[in-house]
Amino acid sequence: MQIADSLRVRARNEQDVLQVVGWVPDAAALYLFSGTRLTWPLTAQQLQSMVGVDGVTSSVVVLPSGDLVGHFDLAIDASVARLGRVIVNPALRGRGLAITVVHLALAEAQQLGVEVVRLNVISTNEPAIRTYRRAGFTAVAGNPDRAGVIVMERALGAVAL
Image (cartoon, rainbow, N blue to C red; front, side):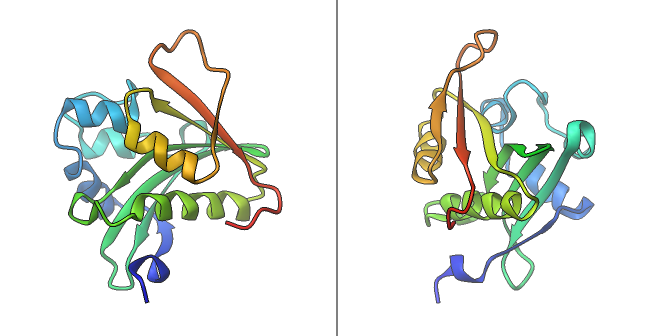
């Protein structure tokens, strides 16, 4: 059994927040993680304060042991969700888990009745862009007020994840 087969999603808790904050080592990494929404140095309070704002829910991807593998946010508005703050535990990077975290986020959105998932990604974040493309996202018309950001989306429908 591969590691990806044993992963599950659960709601993020306060202890998880402390770990996720530790995964963001500097201002450049924070920008890739959240754009300009959070400021360096990242604190648990900043990350926690986003939950519930604009419909944001935060989840973590965990191993059966409970160890954290990844993190993502979903902000749901009717049948559209915005995926954000996707990150993989640095100790587990390089194992192809980013695509698994994204697929689990899509499955979570689908279970919540979402039909379309959108996201913003920093245009220089090539690893993230490749992952999102592999997950079926395509670039759409962007927001001219946010230079350096690519807007991507994926329709869910009945597509198997």
